[in-house]
Length: 91
Image 1 (cartoon, helix red, strand yellow):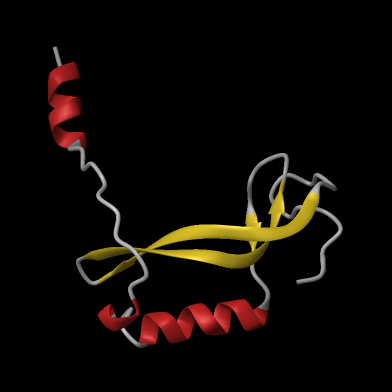
Image 2 (cartoon, rainbow, N blue to C red):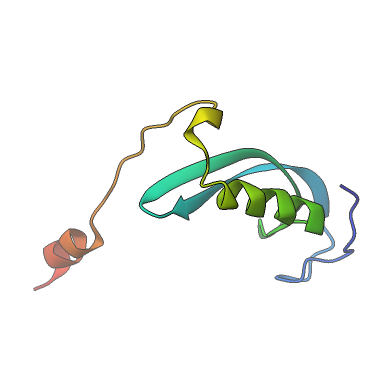
């Protein structure tokens, strides 16, 4: 992926560089993570930009329903309740 933008459209920094990122997506009731996504990333604010070819592949993954037969690894993540935390803070 070539740096197609000179400046970050989010913060205006000229610190946008190509690399690989991971991103989480909700699909129905499942949270899935996709690794090794080519992206341009701003080193100042962390904003990530994908080219059209990358977006197409991500759309195809989503359209396939993130097929279970293609799962590479699994993660366990903690889940927190905002409502419970807010209730503890209420007077």
